[in-house]
Structure formats: C-alpha cells, structure tokens
Image (cartoon, rainbow, N blue to C red; front, side, top):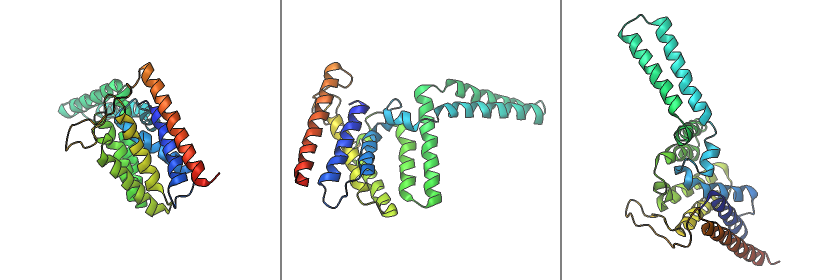
Length: 246
C-alpha cells in the first residue's frame, strides 16, 4: 500500500486503541504515534514517506563528504611533503569527493537515516533511555535491508512494541506500547492485502502471506485502498461511538 493509506490506517488504529482498549486514555499524541508507527516498516524503502521526512539531512551528507575531501586535500598540500603520504591523502580526498558527487536520492537518504539513527542512539546513551537507543538503532539499520523483508516481520513488530513498552516505563505515558505496536502491525496487515504479501515469519520461512485484493500503485489498487480506509474508519467510528454510549 501507499504511504498515505498506511498513515490513514495507522491513525484509525490509534483511534480504535484510544476509544476501545480499557485503561487507555483518549490521547491525540497516542493516535499520532500510531500513525507514525504505521509508517515505520517502510523505512527499508528510501522513497517512503517516513524515510523522506527522517532523511532531511541528506543534502548535508553530500556537503559533509565534500568538506572532508577539501580538508584532506588542504592538509596534504600544506602539511605533507611530496611523497607517498601526500599521494595517499590526495587519493583519499578524491575518493571522498567522488562519493559526495555520487550520493543521489536513495543512497544519500540511506546515509542520512544512518546518521539520524546514530545520533538518536547517542542521545539515548547520554540520557540513559534504552528505548531511545533502540529506536535509533532501528532507524539506522532499516534502510539497509531489502524492502518488505526484516522490517515487515512479526519480530520487528515485537521489537517496535517493546521499544514502546520501554518508553512507557521511562516516560510514564501509559499506552505507548499499544499505540506503537498497533500502528506497526496495521502496516503489516495492510500489506498482507496486496499481491506481494508479507513474509511475516522471515527467516523461519520465506513464505509470503497474502490476501491479494489489490496491486499497489494501480488505479484499481488506489480505489481499493481508499475503500479499505473508508470502511475501516466507519467501522472504528461505529465501535467507538457505541462504546462511549452516544
């Protein structure tokens, strides 16, 4: 499914959790977290909605490689005498420069997500929040996996829910694990409705579980996505209204 459909389904799932799960207060941040979590599995795709948002530093990554190249070249010219060491420094400068030029689109975004994730890990270590370090690790590693592989498994959903549970314990925000886990699983369930399906149990089995109702990106698939979102939204709305006794 497209990112917009996943976001809608995640937000609707958040409303369902807030309105139907006993003991969970109705929380707009919680619903937003469910929407965010519904986009998280697609961090393995550089063109996904969330990858583009979190990879906002991709332009700076290219400039960083260019800056390192210039610094190495300047160091070699002003500090080193002609010889093997200077030639090695010039070669390294050229390599960094070429990498910076070559970094376009997906490759730059992957590196940007890597740096964003590593920065989050460091913040987690500094603040002693394990959940933040695990979140950063997920963000850093997910872009380097193939699409609909490791991030689209029951194990990844369990890890994401565990991160939410740790955040719940650290922040005292009851319900984080429900919103995080519910949003994440909603993505996997939605992708199960596509012709490609989801390999829920990878690496135990490479079998793709699917109910092939739609093909992502096609006109009929887009219509089906809208119908699923609308139907799911009406169902949740009816259940929540009935639960609240209106």
